[in-house]
Image (cartoon, rainbow, N blue to C red; front, side):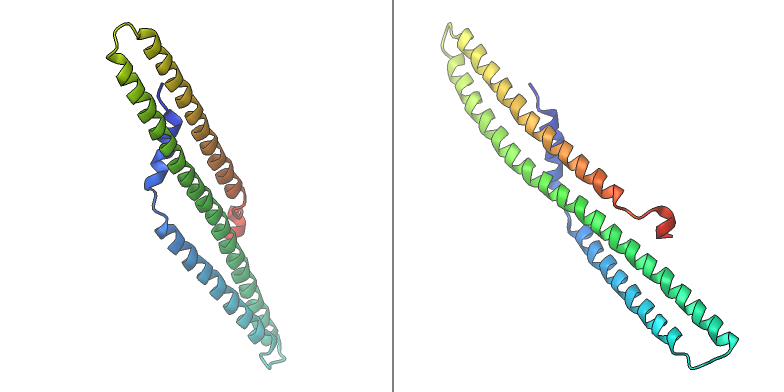
Amino acid sequence: MGTPHADRLYKMESWRTSALEDSHRHLASVSQSLTQIATGNREVAADLGLECATARAACASLDRLAGRMLTQADALKQIVKSSTDVLNAGIDARNESVEIQKRLSKVNGLFGSAKQKLSHVPGDAVAVAQIEAQRQAAHAEIDSLAKTSLSKLNERTLAAIDGLPLRDQAS
């Protein structure tokens, strides 16, 4: 029996996360900068030192701009949080894959050597068949673990997607 889920999960082991981690740092920095600029704009709007209609219009304009900037900063924070959740789910899946692959290697080595030893003994076809059945059962159990890991990754990814800001909110 093959292990298709373990094979799919194994692909996670080559995944490099450094670019995504760098992106998170940059987006968080942009969000923080937007918040600081918006706060500064609101302070300026509150203290223009003018009392005319033009000043009130300028204050309102600066306040609207600050509000949009804060909305964008919050949207970036949500994107970073969701992306970080997916990143962590992927890292967990990758770590689980490493453990599953170790277990699979151990099973293959154990049953492979036992099957090889018995294949040289005449009349032990029944024993070879039993070992093969045990190997297939072990593969099924391991593949079930990989399927569970992939399911958890999918669930966590979908949950993170649900946490993304709505398109209207982010634009």
